[in-house]
Length: 317
Image (cartoon, rainbow, N blue to C red):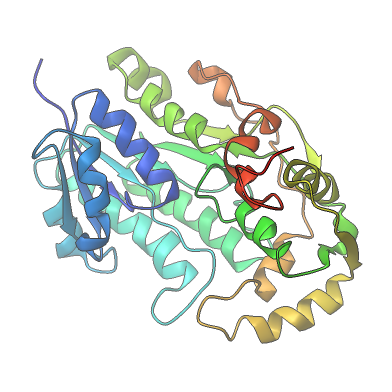
């Protein structure tokens, strides 16, 4: 069997490192296509010498994309942003970027294309983020209809930007904000399960035939309200903080100021997203259809949030 070669756009990100790790274990030759290859060097020890190669690529430029894909039989697109800044706009990254990658993959005769979107992707959404994710899926299908699309919910794991952010807030703030009263529902999914889904989709020719052209909703086994997630967090890190309900209008006012920061903790577009539940619709297959059993939040969170306990990870009970 010929050695398989994959180009992974955005492979140095949170989900990317887990996808890279799993594919490396299966013997894949991996090209990590990122804007700054030096920031992806930490991935090289996950494989053998020469197995994982960071390369420079920018999804705004078609020649750059074509060069990164040349000679690969598989392409994985993990590129995404949570807020806009400079040239990094939602439409440019999520929509135009997906179109360019799909078109280049089609021209290069790539066999498989995996595309990571988001659970809230919706062309009718009032959120620019969600609309751009939906647009990316549509443009992708125009050029590579056999692509497999994954729509993960909020992804959690040791490097996540959700639970770690709120846990860090408890070190400085006497309260945690509940935007909109904390009633928004979420179905968090473990990053390892998301990576396993990608691996299963690429496992063999049978999987290729079953998953090609399909969309999968990747969500955890349980639905939580935002308030329940904050209560679970506080219980795990053994801290008592007041959960302060904040109206959407006040949160929007705060976000209009915070989004001016270089790395905004909250934007007005994110406030719009929080007005809608982020749970699996049931209209698409999920993790179990790929043979992946979703991991429970309570089983994983203690493994990395214990460092936020008073006194740190090794504090005595």
